[in-house]
Every structure is written in C-alpha cells, then in structure tokens.
Image 1 (cartoon, rainbow, N blue to C red):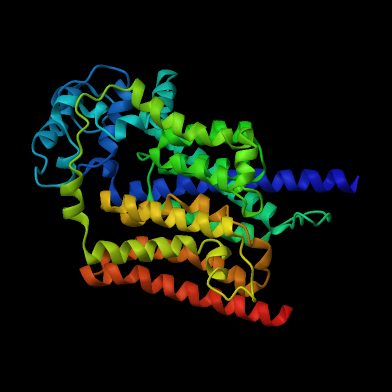
Image 2 (image 1 turned 135 degrees about the vertical axis):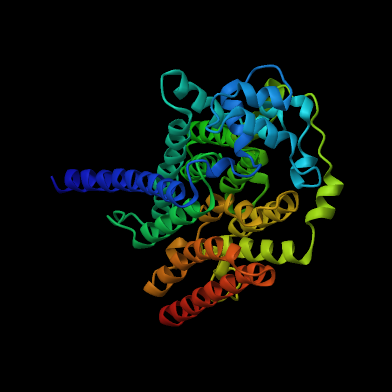
Length: 429
C-alpha cells in the first residue's frame, strides 16, 4: 500500500511539473502579446517569416519571396505590408547573407531543413486550429518535455549506481534547476521559433541516453534534429554516455551499443534530401568578418560559462582532483558543448540563445550526487536565473554594459558554487 501510494505521488508530481511548465509557456506568450502587441513576432525581419511560410507551403516548389508572402495566409498582417517589407529588407544586414529571393521564404537554408515545427503546425492547421495557436501548442509541449526530463535526469543522477535505497520522493535541486531553466527559456524564445520544442526533445534524448533507452533516444534525437540541426551533437552525447570507464575500446568491442549515435546524423542528412533549396549559398567569410569582435566573443564566452554552470560538474572540474573526482566523460561533454556553441555563435547574432541550446547536454553530466548542501542548490538555481536576468536586462544597457553583464553574472554564480564546493569538501573530509 505504501509503495503504491509512493508511486502515485511520484507520478502526480511529474504530471504537475509537465503541466506547470506548459502554463509558464502560455503566460510568457500572453505577456509578450500584451507588452509588444499582437504582431510582435513580425515587426522586424526575422526567422518567424520562414517558419510561418513553411507551415503554409512546406513541400511546394520555391517561389519568389513576394509571391510567397502574398500566398501565405498564415501571416496576421496584410500581405501588401509584408511584401513591401520583404522587398525593402536591408541588403547590408546579416539576413542578406542568407536570403536568396529565388528560393521563396519556405526554402531558405538553414531554416528550410528545420521541418518539425512547421509540419506539426500545418497538421494542426489542417484540422481547424489557427496557425498562432498551433505554434503555441508546440511551444508549450517543448516546455513540458524540458521540465519533466530535466527533473528526471537530475533525480537519476543524484542516486548513486551502487545505492540500492529508494529514490527520494522530491529532489529539491531537480525542482529548482528545472524551474529556473524553464524561466530562462521563456525569456529567450517565442512560439514562432523551434527552440522550445528542440530543447524539450533534446532533454528527452539526453535522459534516454543516460537511462540506456536506445529506441527512445533514436526517436527523440531524430525529432530534435528535424526541429533544429543543432541536435546533431546528441550523437556524441550517446557515445560518451555509453563509454565504459573512459576506455575507448569499449565502443569498438560493442558497435551495437554505439549504433543509436548514428540517428541524429541520418536525420541531418535526410532533412537536406527531402527539401528543395536551389540556392543554399552562405557567405561564411562575410559572416565571420561581420560578427567576430571582442564584444561578440566576450558576450559569447560569458553566456557559455553561465549555461555550463547549470550543472555542478563544471565547477567541480575546476577543483583539485583530491577534493573531487569528475568523470572524464563529463569533462568531455562540457568541452564539446562549449566548443560547439563557440563555433556556432560566430554565425549568429543571437549568441546567448545559441549557448542555451546546449543546456540539456550540460544537465546530462554527472556529479549531481556530489552537490548536496543548500548552498549548492542556491548556486545551481542562480545559474539559469542569472541567464534570465541578463537576457531581459542586457538589451536595455549600453553597448559595453550589455556585453560585460554576461561574464560578470557568470563570475558571481561561479563564486557561489565554488564556495559551496569548498564548504562541502571540508564537511566530508
């Protein structure tokens, strides 16, 4: 009877976490609509144009941008206004390096290969749901998945593999970090972007990798890549998660165990094989020249460090090995995630948003069971909340303050976590 009650209570907690995160997604969108207006997502030329056009004509042949906008009945503004805006886009802007008019909006790379979000919205629209509601449904689904499986990942990592005791009913660290992460995502993205559902599916894939659920990982990782090509790095996470005691030979001896890592790569290739993009040129040299500066680098490194502090493994890896032992796999996951963001941030002006996309990989690292004190909980919760603060406040700062805010916030959070680690080390010694 007690065991059954425990199981029901745990299930109710997980359902409540999923629904609560979804509600946060709805509330964040209501706030944006009230503060920015109903057409806020289309007030400037941005990614929302591509995803909305794809939801209208995902598999059609490429057309001119003007005709594409005229036919895209999903746009809330009048077609005439949209066509004029498309024709008058700033030819010197970053978008000009991606935009090829002969492709039509639905066939611009790399957006055209992110087919999951517009496909689901098109399906929902086909059964009578408006496009705006369809985007919001997928957005909130991503919130629910992210909250649920970040919590489950932390709970699983807090219990040692050698411990046979029952898992605690409630993980305060898991609940705090999961809630903070959801708030950070709510402040960073909106329903017109695939980031929310990508993060939710990535977190599911990370949990599946840690739990050795190969079929679930293949489905989740494939879906994540179809939401956003950033998910290709999930294959590397699977390989590192099954890497036995740091011995590379363990993967060679069991290629079947490593096989699921191929799924994200295949999804990456398939999406590029089924969507026609006649002109897929990207002027990488011009992008690097336009975006690479001390401001971009400082902001990017600050955002990367802040996201890496979402899990205790980052801070503990900075301590002497005698005080704390961090698995080599965790160090490699953090290094690969940070390096991946550092590379991709040079191709996007939204540097901080790029850093947040690897949060599921960071949370998937180990060492959670080594962070037990309340000070650790405070330090780990402070990381996503500091990200939220910087994301909301930095646009209102001057050019220098906007850049320096990120490394300063990361430094404060790191200090809190280092104090927590040192205090816990003294108490256990």
